[in-house]
Length: 334
Image 1: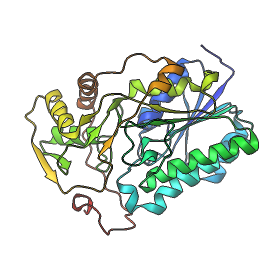
Image 2: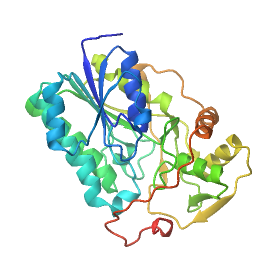
Image 3: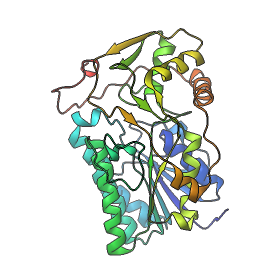
Image 4: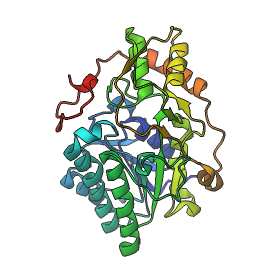
């Protein structure tokens, strides 16, 4: 289905998931305006055909200028600093980027009669002890990242009630794949393992490694998000999106080692305060979107490993503005 008249604003378009969503929006015939502050993404990720603007969703004048210049029909809000574990220690930064920036976008969407606001939330909103996570559960987020995501979800509901702004909320989880930043030491465990495999370092596992996650290849997530405003049944609904099968972190390390043809060398670090088991039910998204079968973990890891080998090896990044150091994991202290 194509419609060349509709304009899509994609935030985080130089990032991992945002660049893939922008690419799929183009394939749907949408005119795509992409924005990114390049704090975690790379302009080289922006798909050809996207009209790119360098700027932050936290910059009120920048956001206002975009909506004044472009007749935006659909907003796809993917810009976020998605380091869930680190969010405890960068609380102000987390809320400024992930909550306040979102509200600036929602305000402009209301003022400019945007047809649909697509928001990528997270299964971090559910908290712990609620597996399999279903959309009917009452979220009980346990970290500032999840709290900020749920706050935006609630604000979108309020904006629909007060102003009629339509929205679609997705709660993806543990998404990986090509274009992911593998030099970020605080998030994306698959990228971290691949960076360690490429540099001959041991794979660092917090705790016993028996935590379970359903690792989701980007091809299982981005096409659904991109198509959402074109699916009337999705309006004002919330969807879990991602893979169905949970794996332990230890099993994941073995898959990454296999893709790089090395023997897994695992070092166990002190356990973090984190949700141990997190995986979702996807019956609702299958009912509304009828996606193809998920990419199997081994296949997805092989695809990402092949792409990663073609990329320059960047040094691991360090977050330079830790706000609270109490209980910060020792491996993050540097």
